[in-house]
Amino acid sequence: QLRLVESGGGLVQAGGSLRLSCGASGRGFTLGEFAVTWFRQAPGKGREAVACISNGALNTNYADSVKGRFTVSRDNAKSTAYLEMNSLKPEDTAVYYCAADYTYYRNCRGEHQYWGQGTQVTVSS
Image 1 (cartoon, rainbow, N blue to C red):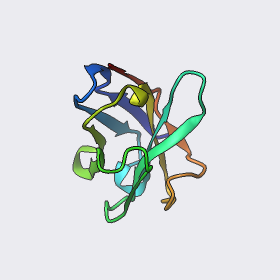
Image 2: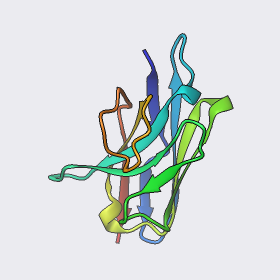
Image 3: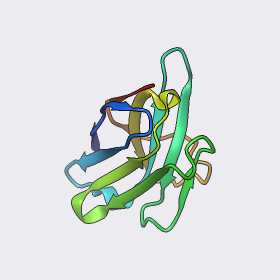
Image 4: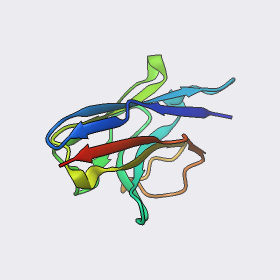
């Protein structure tokens, strides 16, 4: 079982920045085997795929709503993936989840086998 734990969420003013981390652990698993996708879900809204990165970091993709502001990256040696979020807007307020799967989905959407518990990001205006 691959275990994912997000951290780095919090309260930030509009225009500010946050960096989310997704730490992975699990006997017999390494994060480098998996593509990682960051999702978010705002209150009363459906889950949205925000950004994804392939296992070797050669491929990334972003939702149009965050393109140019968010950057997804990973450090497989540290079994950690990151989501750097800049120029944050109130509409970015959501619970952010990282998810992992052996398959890299070019549009970031698809069935993901492993999920973290989420971290709250709140952007005040």
